[in-house]
Length: 236
Image 1 (cartoon, helix red, strand yellow):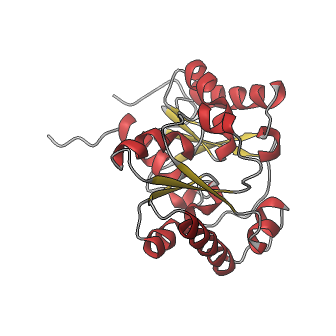
Image 2 (image 1 turned 90 degrees about the vertical axis):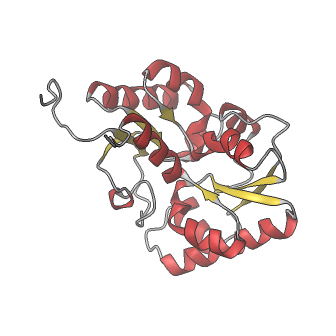
């Protein structure tokens, strides 16, 4: 029997994206070509700056967008901005389906995977804007050792992501990511894994994993986990 009751079918995972026009290369969750399965986008009015401190308006916008996806039959939702972690708990509870508000919600899992030893590196869009509230809402606790490296001092990232430029140069951005990764490595001798807070950086996960020799997690790794969970493959 075919599914009924919705205006479209065949999409299990929804992606909440902000109403900004930042260029999105393949690998970024904001580019549908990044996924090996169909996804449904829902635009949230606002931008990452609205989630530095948060507030009732952006919270309501996120909830409304998530509810639209649920009503359309989506089975799991991922947020396309690490700062959405601020409302991980409330949206996860109120939407009633699996919700990964940020790549950061993988932190507790990563800590278990590396044997609760060493440090997890977090490469964030701006280290001054990623606050303890975002980390705690993602499941971080004081026993999980984090080393945080911001991208705000990398010129092309600042131009495109922070200042809203449109002329994305993938090679320059890759260079910025690798430069930030080297800074992270230099100050974190016990580095065991890295997570990209900023979803714009998932394009370069393979480059960073190869350069640093550690596993790299991002928004797509969270989305892929959800996609598998809500529609696991049938073997028999």
